[in-house]
View 1 (tube, one colour):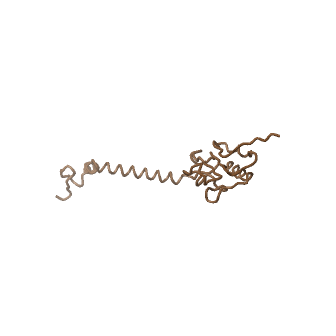
View 2: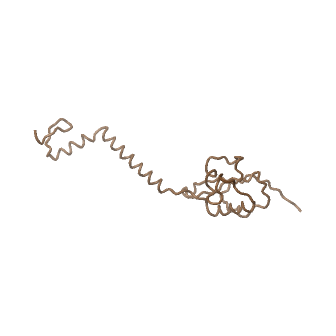
View 3: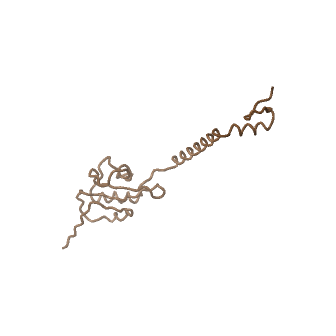
Length: 163
């Protein structure tokens, strides 16, 4: 018959009946298919949220006072980091300073390790400083006290001279 169709329950219904919409939607959106639609929708929303978060993240930077202090300390001690191991002049808390490289690794002299979890992951602080086997001679520079998050100063033998 023209203008008639069977709904999901096998009952003939007029195509022009407004009740067709209400009978058709629950049949179409029942069981597995509705669950599939909801899961796809949820995954799309989660994906969009993750993309937005990734785009809003900024790279963590070393506290500028600590960068200045570290450069001053190294200048006073006449030491420098080997090229390519970590960036002493621009962003010291990068490369080996923040990866899994062990602090006592003999290939890294001098060396720092940083934690970049401060201020919601936007600020890095120098937590460890190694100058082992570099024959550093002299007094501890005042700038060393600027490194307020320093928990490990490795490689010093303190010798007291009495006159």
